Image 1 (spheres, one colour):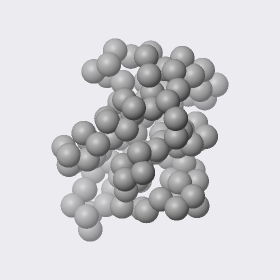
Image 2: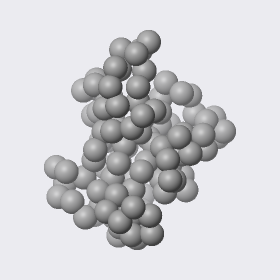
Image 3: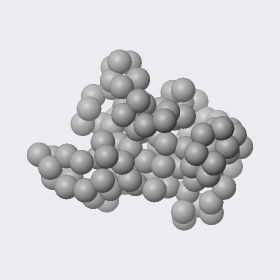
Image 4: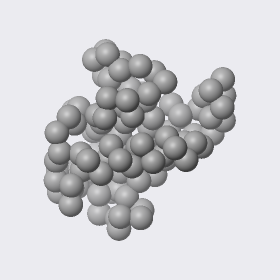
Length: 112
């Protein structure tokens, strides 16, 4: 599912319960301000966004923990984040500016 409009955190909780229990895998397009959620792998969500016109360099994988407190809602961890040629040498999102953009997109689309 691609989020283009805000959803309640309760919807994320429902998705988590149907999948991994406590988390929802997500891929954020920081340029378009959209999120693909609910896939088994970040790569599945990445493929959906690429098919819909997203650019690879704008996509970042995260995990959303909808039942966690706000400071632990997001985990910046995905194999799709490994981009040594672009300076991201870990599964995390190393650039604080990109992390901020991801947070902004999530905050705009996942409401309490």
